[in-house]
Image (cartoon, rainbow over all chains, first blue to last red; front, side, top):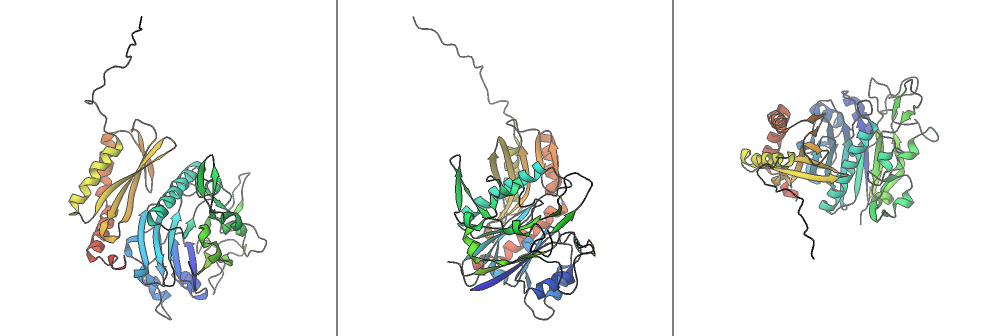
Length: 275
Length: 133
């Protein structure tokens, strides 16, 4: 059995080296996934490995100005598969078990794109995920990133897109048939993090304007799991991080502090003894 | 008495076949191998979805477990090919073959593309990923 702790953070082009290292240290993070990074790789590694040399930048192929992947695994255990503008895909060959297929994604933002455009991108990425799972003969899939959609948005739920639902027991059915077509589920645990009951914050991204419809808190930063990983997922581990362990990432009003990022980091744990 | 059924179709020739975006992309994909001494290859992945064809221009590194980098995607919104939509970091419309060729030249010569190609070529030569295949 191996516990794998994941961190995802859209760092909004801020050089948050100290904050990333603090979160990694205080939460014993194994896999760090960043969107919109703007930091010096060497400085980040120095900070992460300050007390103990553990972290490595993974294959430089996918160290772009859009995504970064840093893990405690040797590069031999991280296999790059595919990259495009909106996602990076790679496999983790977990030493104790089988392989994980990881998609780190960042869909177009809501300020510059119509909801229909974001849905269209989402559908295309979701179809490509299905294809790569078939090509790799692997469905231990984790999709994590900034979707720029809330869990309840059509692009997340639509069977022809991510088909990501909030009930792990239903998702365990693996698929359903609609109009003679078979659609595979993702489990989306993020529904539970939208709202303030039982949560430290009501979402990961705060946006308030003078429109009549305004959610204020959004859950754009999400993780989706294929049903094969549901039993490996520690539900209680899932949370948005409001402090790097040494200082708060929120303003006095309790919303994400732009001085760091306008998004809050997301962490969760997988317990891997894959069959 | 048998009725004569008239063929209403005119004659079609292949002299005026329009070069659609996919043909143009495939030609350019084949040149990538030549330009990189076959260390990298070009591939066009076509997806048909709800009356749209999208063609992704992929750079494939055979020596890195076929790692694939998608440089951009062209979306044909109807059967006529042009105008089509270019999608990458930004999205814009392309009117005709001339404009597409000009855009391709610009993208292939950009610093970003050169950086990606150089990185994939040097890592393919190092061949360190193949060890764990």
